[in-house]
Structures are given as structure tokens and as C-alpha cells.
Length: 387
Image (cartoon, rainbow, N blue to C red):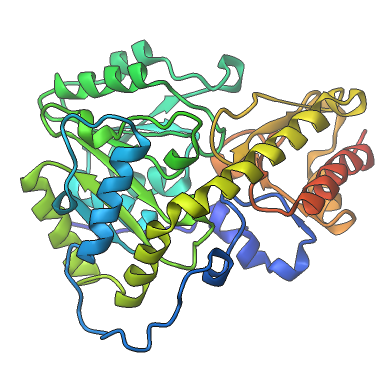
């Protein structure tokens, strides 16, 4: 087998942390709630007495119990049940995605991956040499997923179907009936598994049932993390939920060979945050709702709607606006003047294999003042770059 050819993706090369946060005044590129200190949430950070031993290889039992309980609560009734032993804790969602892809796919294996998508969901199967086929969602269709078209793409040899909801980068959403239909397609297939990246699940007005709980043949996996909803990407904490015992052994073996176990300190801090989630989440949701309203109002203004348009996000903290008439704008100049003259940064469309006349706008990360000023910068930059 040839060595794996790792390639850096544009979203990482051009990320705000690589560019330098101090070079950005109004950061509208982030796909999470605002970065937080644990003290902002009133979390006790004293771990001086914590024994820094190798931890449980699946993850801190108390943390796994909290994850299993939260998964059931945010999805409503959970008739099939999720227990803590069906949770594998990882150092963030990205390693979880990597572990699942490498456990299920090899060269030539057919994988259906939703696009656009978070880069890791696409890049890891591509790096493995999988036969990668996109499940396209399009602006022109309101970013709606066509389940009939998805069904027609499934082959007898399909190994993985990977979707993301609430969706990054569009903010699109599906309903429970649609998810159940997709799970049914997988359950009826001899080899396929469903991966649902559920990182924003707790931010949906009506969270979907946990995908892993819906599969009667235990062929669905759910992945999430602490990064996006809680604004804690520096607390490297994610998880995989899976009810297939045989696959669980494979996933654990992968984790052990990469990490052995997780960070004892990170897992303890994550548990403390989840124990306080009923206090922490309501203000987060309130800020996100307020900021979505600000963007909605901005786009409704006469001078703005002549320049920009979007399909309004239904969940999460991001959406994809686009220039209404891209031929009237010098796109390269637009991005250049946006940052250099107006201090505003967004995620350009090429991060997601979309036209550069579109961009990901994150409205959950900036302060309210930064959001207003960043939006003003977008309109000013479009005027600067008009042909």
C-alpha cells in the first residue's frame, strides 16, 4: 500500500488562526459560537488534585454518561437507547471523522459524501483513495437534500454515506422524517453505513433524533464535539456514538493506536461543562437568535439586497450569502479590500468548492458590535470592488 498523501486544505491554510487573529478586526469567518474561557461559564478549573494517569480508553465514564444522556434529551424520545459504553470519546470531531473514515474505507471503496461540507469529511476519504461521489446540495434548490437522488446514487458496493446536519457551511436542516428515511436506506443496504456529523445538533430549534439510535441494524454513527456549540475548540473534545459492538472494537483500536486514550484534564473539564449545560446553553441560543436576526435585517435593507442574497440558515451559526451579480464585482479585489480596508474576514467559497462569489458568514462568533461593523464592511468592500 502506498503512503497516505496528506494535503492541507484551503480552509486550514487560510484560517483566521493561521492568518493571525490580530490582523482581523471583524471575524465573520468562524463556524462556532464565540471562543470562551471556562471561567466565562463559571466552571471550576482547579485540577491540581487530578491524577494525570492514563484514562479509560473509551473516555472518562462520567463524561460518556453525560454525552449519552444529552443525546437522548436533545433528540426527544430515544426508544432504542444509547448507553455510555456506546460512546467513544476523541480529541475533537476531526479525529473522530478520521477514525471512522479509515475504519470503513480503503482504496476504491464507494463513499457518498455530502457537498459542500467541512473539508475533513471530504479530504480523508479522498486521501484514502476511496471512490468518492458527492451528494450535492445547491443554493438554487434552497440547499435542500434530494433523498430520491441520494437513493439513486447508492450502489450495491457502497460502504459509507456521510451527511452533516445542521449543515456546515449552509445552515440547512432536514426534519426527523427525512433522517428516518435515510437511515432506512442504509438499513436496507448490505454494506453501507451512515455517518451523521451532528456537531451543531444542540443548536437546532428542534434537534433531530440521534442518528445512531434510529438504525435497527446498528449501521448509523453520530459524531459531535464541544467546539462549535460551546465555543471551546481549545478543549479538544469530541465523540463517536455507535451501537455496533464489532465496529466499536475497531474504532477503539484505531483510537488506541493513534492516542491510547484522551487527555485526562480535557475530559474532566468537558464533563464539568456538560454538567452545567442547562445553565450554559440558553444564553448561547439567545445570542445566536439575536445575531441571525441582525443578519436577516441587514440583508433586507434596500442597498444590501441589491448586492447580496442568501438562503436563510435554519440551524447553527453559519450561512452562505453570495453576490447577486458576481459579474459586476472584481472578486479578488472584493476579498482584498474587505480585509485590508475594512478589517473583515469571511470564509471564501473556494474553502468549500463553491464559487468565490459566495462565502461562509459566521454570525455566532463575533460580538454584536463586531457583527454590525463586519456586515457594513462587506457592503463597503462590494462598492470598492464594483467594475
